[in-house]
Length: 173
Image 1 (cartoon, rainbow, N blue to C red):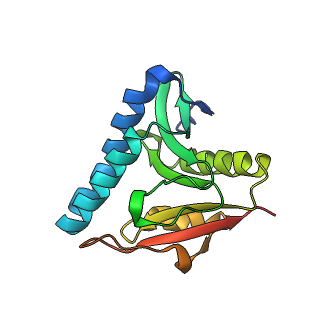
Image 2: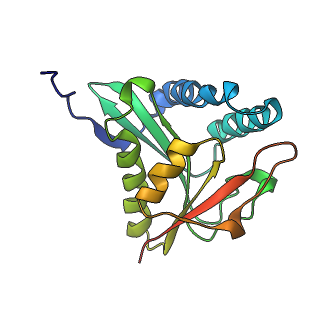
């Protein structure tokens, strides 16, 4: 009988983990290079790299097992320009860049990171938590929907030549 993996913890990323978070995120999102149309992939890759370089206020949250990084997510405060000129500023926190290392998948890492974002958003008094995901990210969309996120078509946007980026919202009341 296979043994269960050791538990992981969810915590704020340390400043010295920023490069590791970047590497994990780029590796996780890199899978879409072979799934998306080239123009869509170029748009997503550029958006991910830009968001990773963002130096404004953002919670960088990680899931770690024995100092090994399993996943990460960024939680942007309300009214932050989380998507540059592509999307309107949301009046609630915005979850971005959810990434789980291949070796961490299927263990609840993504769910735990999203739950931590929802917990922090509730604690801040937010009425909702928003996110956006591309049409190719079917596993992510399924996770969000199972967790109670609802489609928010009013928040959709479509970068030139790229896939539709779908808005989702979790009501926190």
